[in-house]
Image 1 (spheres, rainbow, N blue to C red):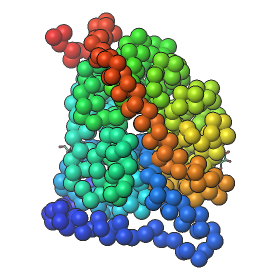
Image 2 (cartoon, rainbow, N blue to C red):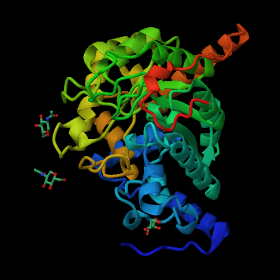
Image 3 (cartoon, protein in one colour):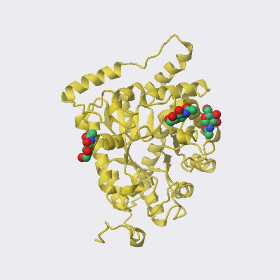
Image 4 (cartoon, helix red, strand yellow):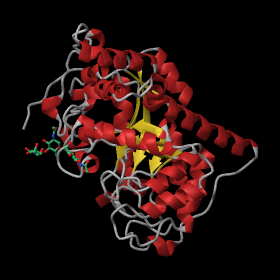
Length: 402
Ligand SMILES: *[C@@H]1O[C@H](CO)[C@@H](O)[C@H](O)[C@H]1NC(C)=O
Ligand SMILES: *[C@@H]1O[C@H](CO)[C@@H](O)[C@H](O)[C@H]1NC(C)=O
Ligand SMILES: *[C@@H]1O[C@H](CO)[C@@H](O)[C@H](O)[C@H]1NC(C)=O
């Protein structure tokens, strides 16, 4: 086991290190022709916020650090303290990350048990590390907030809640997560919930139950992004037909390239384009290449595929750093995002397309989701007071019946 790295010196020393980290550029030989794209990619990401849909750093903090962020210096190279170890402040700066949905993830074994508590603890640790490093991070909940933080050279930090079991089948609990700042809910993780099927867990509901459909509409009313990563194909289709606002896939790749249920099939992508949503592409080698090994070029193939099928308006980046045990060669950690953009430039993508992929698509989706919520509020639509049918949660010994 690694020894503790005590920060001891407090916020002032921390701030000085951040300033140095920001000033250190990605090492690039400006005269070498093969690096001209890399320089252009870095410039592009300095003008347009790169918004990544999914990063599990908070999960690493839980598993590796017991959420004791006070004890560590996150603005130094943290590789020896995490497994996996794709994220720390110096590497986030090197990778020119503009904004991040930090995944507040709850493991499926907590379903019907203490999922709500663990979800709260993960939001707590996220909010605490954001506060500890105010020169790097800014907590945000809106598209305007992301842009304002970016203009101040802060990494806009949003909460994405991963795993529908975190709300214990309660719309009131969903609303309270929204009030805490959560701006997406991934409808399932790898387990079915009592109201939605996961990608690989037997499909007991053949999609969404009526309660699951009510939940999608309640998320529309709140202005919370519906995240269809991890759900079954039927849930993707039914959610797309029920939703009144654009949806996202926070970390999903192309099924036509790698045929796993976690990836998005072509017909769903076409519905996503009509819905106006965005699919943020996952870097996990097993979803990218269907093997334990993948390269940056394999990842770029997924971007090319989606652009050819539905256009650049519906693509984003959802790398899943710290949530995946292996990464592609060339995209090892959060410092590498500019290399992906350089590769796409090499493949003929236009700057306007790459700005959309980096962040403008997600900003468009958020603004539309926010607008629809305002509209429904103006129309006087009230919170949905429906409870799940007790029969659907009868296996839960923790439900008191109160
Ligand atoms: C986390 O907590 C467990 C159980 O209390 C303990 O065994 C472990 O050493 C702790 N790890 C760290 C990194 O603090
Ligand atoms: C996996 O990568 C290899 C090497 O780049 C490539 O030949 C193969 O087509 C890829 N397979 C998939 C499913 O992407
Ligand atoms: C594939 O990845 C595994 C695990 O990361 C590694 O041990 C193996 O050498 C790799 N194989 C190839 C062909 O690169």
